[in-house]
Image 1 (tube, rainbow, N blue to C red):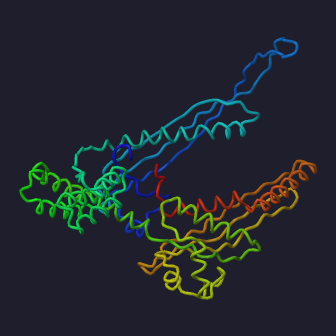
Image 2: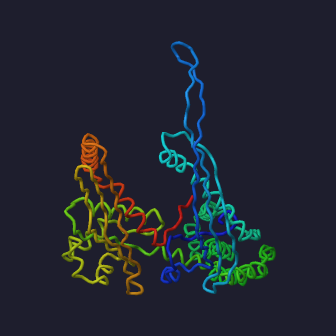
Image 3: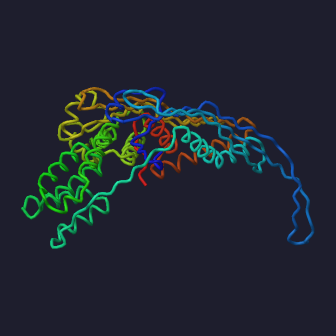
Length: 424
């Protein structure tokens, strides 16, 4: 979609739409993808392989088991406007991918093949799905960037603008206007900066002021003022300027408060708290450093997550200077080892309070449980227990107990919160 001129401002995985998120992100359209069927067919066949013995140089014939696979993925895509909910595009897709792999048994072969094949299958499905919503019409426009070659600030502003640093460039143009060295050309540059960051209403106003200030200047006569204003009205009507709403959503600072702890683990809850902070930061959110929020809370007598139940979210938000605060309560963080039986559990709840609306915005409480059992023999059971103990010792030594389960807990719960795709 982005290759065709669209912009994906956020994504999330959910069974139903959450209106507070839509109001906060302000999209002009929504892309809903539904996956209905995934099948992987498997068939074994035997090949005769000939190789040479490195010592005797004699040919050796042996039979090798190969497993043929064919994966099929079906689903549909709907693209509709928001908030009108008018359908803009519909498509269905059925993508398939085939291949074979050598394996000792069917289960191992399927896992080995699927690990490499499924990303290719998803790519094929995406290509089919996007065809159904049609290609975006691209209109190319050119805009003038004015430079005063006698002023180093003007040349520096142009250099910043060309590298995409419009905010820094705008500060220099404003400085020229305030010093009375600037003129309508700097106003036109400011309007262009607003246009480039999709503040179309502001750009329209500044362009109009620049046109009036230019008067009969010959350079101004070369600028297509009417075309520019028409373009800005068109994109504003399409709702494209709503991208600023999404930027505001991600710019609101978030404080991840100390987690309450109903477990015997000392490191677990704090480790998960750090993982959540990191994932939200990588997803485009403005995050308040953990040590800063901890310091602000300690100044008012709060040093542990369990104490937060006694306080009010409004006060925590004010003290930490956060627009949103995220609470965490870890109820299970255990690695159970009972001979042949192993169970690794990470469970708890996460929730976010929003200072603007003064209400709870989001909650998630999906647990992660990994189980294993070995019943074939006493030796196998002893080996299984030894492996469990060794793994637990290594994880604790590295400071990451139940690391894989903790990572999954963070991922599956935060996937129901709007996340910004990675920016290339």
